[in-house]
View (cartoon, rainbow, N blue to C red):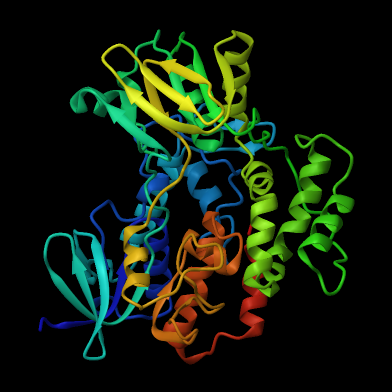
Length: 463
């Protein structure tokens, strides 16, 4: 058996980096920490962007890494980023790549960073072995650890439908399965007909990038609704909602509808009210039964995604310009099959429609986490209430098949959504990382309790 590691972080993106940052700042010994991941630490899928046109969809004061210094990124950005397009009437919306650079600089500047063991590989399996965690990596290694934190973030997108190709080499350049980095954009000619699967922020980022490089061809967006998320307004929380007691999903929906004003969703008034509702929703979500969560998500998951993930003003402006030029159209439906021939890409929709283009880009965000599925198969974990990932408790401990918690295995990040609620934003993940660092280190012999949690909640307001 190889030497055991005291604590292993599985993953190398934003969640892994901020977890390491908070652990080191709480006094965890750097030489007892191992990080396993094949990419550039701190960037991951969300911020490891090659395209300068993929932007954060939140203004500069909202990505909070440190509860004691919530405007740290805003100050760093002002001093370190030259971006003539950043300023809008709703605030400063920086490039995703620049935020990734910020996180990378933070972690590498931490005292003791050079003592962290880095393993450039991916964990493909996790099992128990003689009271330790045995981690199998994709390059054939076995790593043993006393404790492990799963911080793998969002899984890369995969095609949401069946794929048929005549020439695999040709399909690899004309069918973009994972668009997040944006490397493919420079190879797209201005006259190409582009098909985008999905109508969310990734599609808008792609449209913004195409518009910026002078695209002249038709762009067709395939999705269940002919709607894009609204543009961000300069909203501000003015008050706290007076939530009713004993909420059911139906009662929650009624209260939210009554609370939201009869104003456009793009207005400051509407978005301020929406944001006033959000800080309490995770607690409410956690009080619902698994069946109630499933019902609520099935009924309103699409609306939540639409209004929760509002777009940067830059991306909406680009979309409106292409729309005015009649270069953008919606094809309402869901992709059933994609065919790639030498002459065209053909998308068969579930309603019988057929869409043709020269290139197709998967913007659905649908991914399959093979590693988390392995944990369920190995009886290490159980599915979360939505069946999207694995279940954790409010302390981020992974739950066993008997519903008891592992006291040496945790998970944080977007995969905890089904268990804990809205954990997508950088600030939400940072809050989890800080909470977990408190638990693991004892906050320098100080327990993490209600007062500390209350303080964190008051800081990370964009949860």
